[in-house]
Structure formats: structure tokens, C-alpha cells
Image (cartoon, rainbow, N blue to C red; front, side):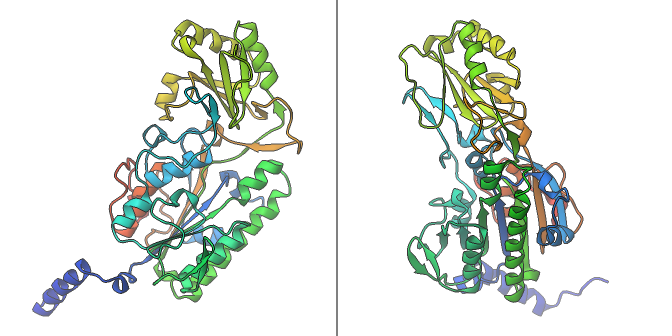
Length: 424
């Protein structure tokens, strides 16, 4: 039955629209809450039933669980940058574990981005944000002591980050860079980052029995946050987005000596470097930078522009057992990888890595290649249709989707789509 439009309802709508356009900070507090939980290294296989995860399962029951696709390389800062900006690494220019020939050093991870992220875009549109150690937003929309975009970095395990999140939601003081700060109102967007699963996975490998305790700890902390949101009577107005940056596989066999031998046999003078390393010999003409389950291969100077030399290196490396794929520059472009990588990028079969010796722990976690592209995406809560799983979601879709949930524009360079099939 249609609803009659009365003069009072029309005038009321006009007044409401006028108030919305000139909303004060206090009135803006009526915005619904969006909570983003970033679980570093949380592989999709951790949800295979190996351990009960009641808090995450409760969110899935009220929404959906999908397997989302990350970006190449599957490295932490590249991945979070892609999520924040809604753009692939060839646009963000965030890269890790490559050789900077101009500086003569192997580069590790950075927070650099050539385009704006959601923190900057949302701040411009009046969204009050809080970030409990989701570091990719630091000084890009949130900062220590900033009452319009507050950043905290308590360190420790996930419980410390959840403590800060609850304090921000509750209007309680929180340590922000050494100063006790109280937000003027609860945030519209709250991010919580945990590195426990990634850290322990690197220490032991993803299939170590000790990982079960880490997964239980992570789920219990999320459950505590859910309960706090309920206690604050915000649960019915909260949308939850839970995801990871990359998956995790195992390595215990070093491939560095074999790679060096293959390239030396082909007439090159190679070296394997870790982050921050520089060649030790002036005769070095090929540098390989180790990055978990990938390695970036850089031929110096004229060799780098010599297609025959690059093919010779590719052929030599193709004979090494343990190398799953060799990505040329054309392959890297198709995968939308950052341009800083070498003429070739190696992907290693499990359980190999570009190391010279086995891991001290006996087994270690690794990521970086396409083997770790699959990650979980949980959507739940007010803005989400229960059971409406998104179709082929990707990292780059989250900035646009979360912007749509907040009713604002995504970051300027966002190229992902809104996952409308999952939204109410």
C-alpha cells in the first residue's frame, strides 16, 4: 500500500535534508558504525574447521564468508595499501623486496603510496576515524593525538588492540603516542589490526599445532569486541568487514645455492640479498632479492636491457627444481604488479624459499607469490544481506564497498567495484 505524502512529511523531509547538509559533529555521531578487522596472514584455510572460531562464525552466520583475491606480490604493506586505496600496486607503486639500482640497496617494505587511501578520502568527507594499529592509515588520515582521526599503537597481541578499540568506542581515554586522548564522540569507522597469526605463522609455519592456540586467541579477542559493541547498544547499527592481507604457506628448503649455481653456470656473477643489503663485489651483475615465496631478479646496466641476456637467465633458472614460475615483465604487467621489480620474478614451489640456509625453527611460514593470494572476506551486520556472498571479491573492491556502506565517495584512484550483491 503506497504511503500518502502529506505537507508535513514533505516539509519534514526538506528540513531533515537541510540539517544533514549542515550537520554538526554531535549530529554526525548518528552515522552507523563500520568496523574493519585486518588479520595479517590469516589464510583462508584457517577456516577449514581445524579449530572452533565461534566469534568469527557468529559474524558469518549474520552475513557471508567468501574467498577474496589479494594482489601481487602477496606482501603485507602492498596488500594493505591496495585495500586502503582500492588500487593495484602498479598504481599505488607500493613494492617490497626489490633492488634499487640507483641507491645500490635492496629495499624492504614501506608505506609509500602514489595515490590517496581511504583515510585521506574519508577524512575529507567528515568521517571520524579510529585506528588501533592498522598502520597503513597512520599519517594518511589518522595520527597520534588527532581528535578527528585517532591512531594508537599499543603493540603486544590482539587483546591490546581490542582494548584500544573498546576505549575509543566507549569514550574512554586511550594512549595515543604517549598521551591520553579521549575522542569527542565515538568514531564512524574503526579499524583493528592484528599481526599475531602472521607472526606466529612465520615462526612455526601455518600447519604447526601451536597455531591452533593463536587462532583461538584471535577469535576470543574478536568475541570480546563483539560483546563490547553489544554492551554499548551499537550492535544493530554496526557493519563488520573482516579480512586478511595475504595467505601463508610453508618453507623449509633453501633454494639460494641452487639459484646461484644455475646463474653462475650461465655466465653471470650473481648475489642473493635480503632487505637492506648491497652487493659485496664490484663484479656482481645479477642481484636476487629474497621476499618469501618470491625472488626479484635484477640484471644490472646494459645486461638489463639485453633481451638475450634476460632470456639466458630465464633459461638457466627454469632448470632449477623448486621454481614454480618465472614472471617476465609482461607477466608482471598482466598481474598489475608494481614496476620496481626486476626483469624476472621467481615464484617458488612449497616448501622452498630463496634462502641460503634452512630456517632456524625447522619450518617457517612464507608468502609473496600467487600461492598466497586466497584470503577470507567476512561481511556482516547492518549493511549486509545475510547469506549474500559477494561474487569474486578482490582486495581492490573493499575501499569502494566500505565507502558505499558509509555513504561517501571512495579514494580518488579507487578502481574496484562496490560489492552491491552483498549490501542491503
